[in-house]
Length: 410
Ligand SMILES: *Cc1c(COP(=O)(O)O)cnc(C)c1O
Image (cartoon, rainbow, N blue to C red):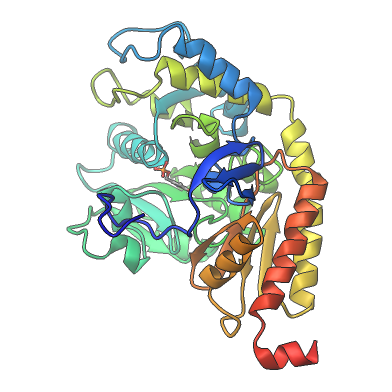
């Protein structure tokens, strides 16, 4: 980027300009090859230019790409039905689930917020404009004005008020705090099963099952934002499955678009989503033919379960190596689930960005989330030798950051 660039300064990217990609690799404008260990924040779960997804997109590009929802098209119901059949049974909506097709993740979250509020007024009998939604400290649900209003990250939130009322934030993983926050106006609990942007933060094991029981008991809807955690990343189709929990609604996004177009959705209970009637919600691009074709190709990849299975297997390799780096004192902490890890660098060695810079020099693309924390989320299509190579390079990068006096001891 040049000093005179017209690009708004909303990002501070690492110094690499990508020109080409295939599978787990990208090449910069000088032809230098990198392993992609961010995978578009999990939007590229199946790697770059996955053959089946590209073929489906190309095929659709020759037929019809956009109709608007004013008219039906021949991929819309198929996409909704297949997504409901695949993800619905992982929610309390079961195979009868409904699907709201949208585009970006933030739109899926906004759609879920609208749905649970309307359910609160129409079904639960909450007085007008009193609906309350409980969220978690450290959350990340997107960038709209409503959503950033219930973030507790000052960089994300500050300066964008006035903020929408109706949200109460409690410590992530603290079910007693949720219980205390619930009252007659509470319509839903909205949380990420595992906080991705927060640094792959896992709640205590009892949290999700207890929260499920609590919300059921109080007639409060449980909404899981699986936009980053879902669709194979954790070795299961939904992260909620790790705790045997079925949310009432799930938000999907990122990987649902196969790395090609933004595709998001809310999936879950028919009786809840049915509160939306014609005209009450919509999107010009939501459920467009190209998005549906791509989404269907993504379902083709996920339905057999092979991506999930290999993610479990390779996740063990990842966890073991990261734990070794912690034991060796090269990392302060590592949290791994499936092919997803949050690693904390000792601030004395450098920031997360310093480590990302050292990784970049060694041919690995990764991104810090905040401070000294980096999220690793390689494509689920990665093969073990690539994973091991990247972990060797991570170890080398960490050693290069070591303070001088530690180097002498080593
Ligand atoms: C990325 C993300 C979003 C927002 O998705 P966009 O497509 O960027 O709007 C929402 N929730 C979670 C958990 C995410 O990781």
